[in-house]
Length: 270
Image (cartoon, rainbow, N blue to C red):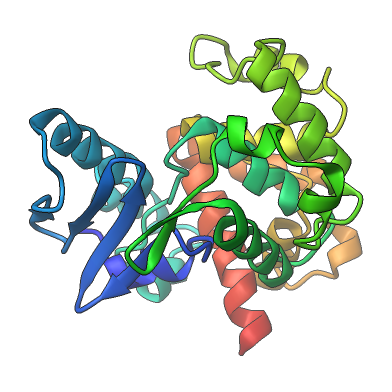
């Protein structure tokens, strides 16, 4: 069973969700919905259509359909078996929408995770619609209406122009994010044609926005986590080394990469 507290702890703290009284609450344009690990709380939603949409989105966000026990069985006799005890019940979070995933990925470029979360939270509070004490992530049309100065005010720095340009292209239809039908290689090739999306961003978007079995092999946190586990120096762990280690785990490679990245964050705090 998923551990809501552990999963929420590793999510981007962006003011669109909260944990309260053991319940995960998520704000949507049509209202707020919750989940306590067993039951959904949909009483704030007026229509059955919105209730179903909220239920489906929460399942997607929290990765409720991921068979964690099957994943752990693959780790039992490996170098990564200790991660089972450390992160037991941790699922792989995803964004409620593909556009949100794209913006949150761009915001994480070349900065630490904590700073990225702060800037994303600033964007949500300033330009998102309030739902009680939560906010709805601003949609593409809203961001597209903002000036560069307004977007830059939340401390996105040079990423501001990327966000503005990519949003404009998404609204116009030039940039497509419904890439479920493409394989990993073709999806990355397509995304990296656009200014502001490199390989790292494309791989992270595919995992975080579409739940494709992809991971950013060049990610510093992932490389650092592997270095700690294998008792190497970070400069000894290259992208190709990451792939050699993780690729054998097949359908579990993105989840394993996430656990290793979370381990790196934990060790940094410890």
